[in-house]
Length: 104
Image 1 (cartoon, rainbow, N blue to C red):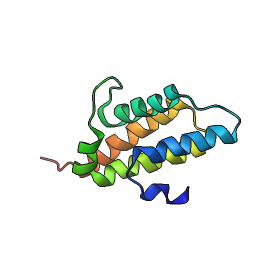
Image 2: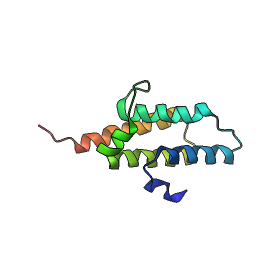
Image 3: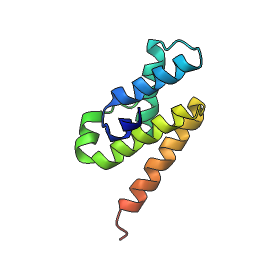
Image 4: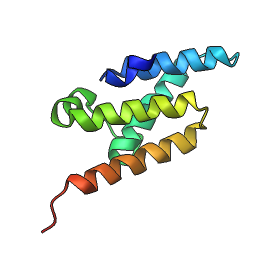
């Protein structure tokens, strides 16, 4: 699983979630994977219900996309609760975007 941070696929997050939940004796159901998609939507847009084309983000901002996925995987592995992961990922995206936005 160490190489997952070189993957730019959502499946890496799903795999990490399933492995971690199995490790602690929990079943991973469909809604758990859906929650991770909502978390990532929130991280990039600030809104969970907003439709988001991850393929477009991956094309336009590949470094940021990969960084968010890797960050989320590390948080899952550390057993950080969902709500905290959600807000940490959003904060990280905002911080990265602020650094890349030129000041006028």
